[in-house]
Image (cartoon, rainbow over all chains, first blue to last red; front, side, top):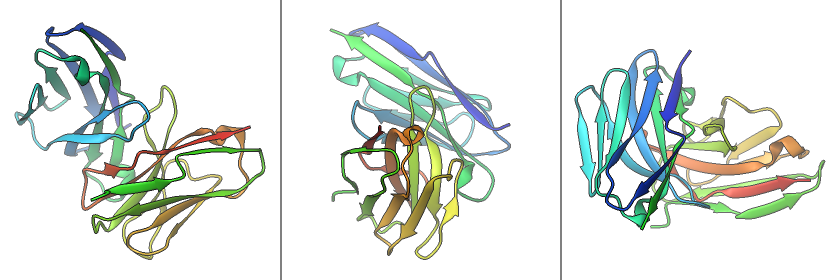
Length: 112
Length: 110
C-alpha cells in the first residue's frame, strides 16, 4: 500500500538548535517528492521538489535530501519565523491525480 | 499574481443545507484539485480536473460534486451538508506537480 509517514509529529527547538525532519515513503515507483510549509490558517506553500536518490535542494536555512526510502528536511540554526507545519508529499509513478500521497506533517516550534 | 483564490474563507452550515465553494487560479494551469484537511490526517483528494471539461473522483468523493466552469475556475458543491463534512477545504492547481494551494475554506456543519 502506498503511504507516507512523517516524524516526529511535533518538534520544539531553541533558536539556533539545528535538527532534521523525516519523511519515509513506500510507493510503487517514485516520480517526485515534495516538501511544503504550512502556516496556521494558510494553505501549504511549496518549498522543494526532489526526483531521485542522492538529490539535494537548499533554500536559506532549509536543506532537503532524498534516499530510496526517505527524505530529510534539515533545518540549520532555525529562527522563530521557521515555526510552521512541514508537509511531505510523494507522487507515485502511476497515472491520475490519485498518485499523490501526503503525510500528516511535522509541527515545528522554534523558541526564541 | 494572486495564485489560487478561494471563497469564502469561513462558512457555518446547518445539517442538510447546501453550498458551493469557489476556486479560481490565474497561473494558466490545466489541472485543478479539491482536497480536505482534517486533524491527524493528511490532505485527502476529493475531486480533480485534469483539464477543462473533465473531472474525476479522488479518494473521498461521497457527498460532493464539482464543476470545472472554465480553465480558471473549479467549484465544489455540497448538496446536503453533514457534520462529517466539517473540515478545511483546499483548492490547488498544477502544471504538472508541485501543486499550488489556496488558503482554504474553513467549513463547520452543525
